Amino acid sequence: VLDDGPNVIQAVVPVYDGDDAASLQQRVHTQEHIIYPIAVKWFVEGRLRMDNNRALLDGNPLPASGLRLQS
Image 1 (cartoon, rainbow, N blue to C red):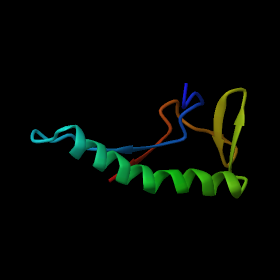
Image 2 (cartoon, rainbow, N blue to C red; image 1 turned 135 degrees about the horizontal axis):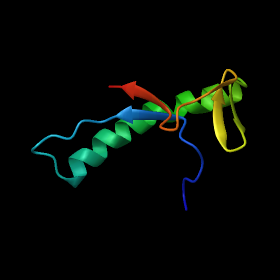
Image 3 (cartoon, one colour; image 1 turned 30 degrees about the vertical axis):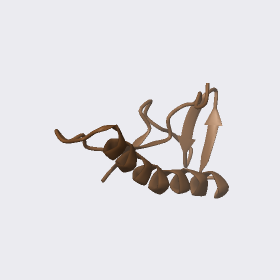
């Protein structure tokens, strides 16, 4: 399993009628390059931590889906 922990942050990626696997993959990849550094920054700053397999940001539990970043 590559990613097994709780969700921290997600990006909303639209799916268009004309999408194929490559175009959707590119849109997802673009958003990953935005959200991964945010999660790493929170962790390095000590704002993000795990407690009993729950993600906490600034001491507050994150929703099970993680925070959602609207693109």
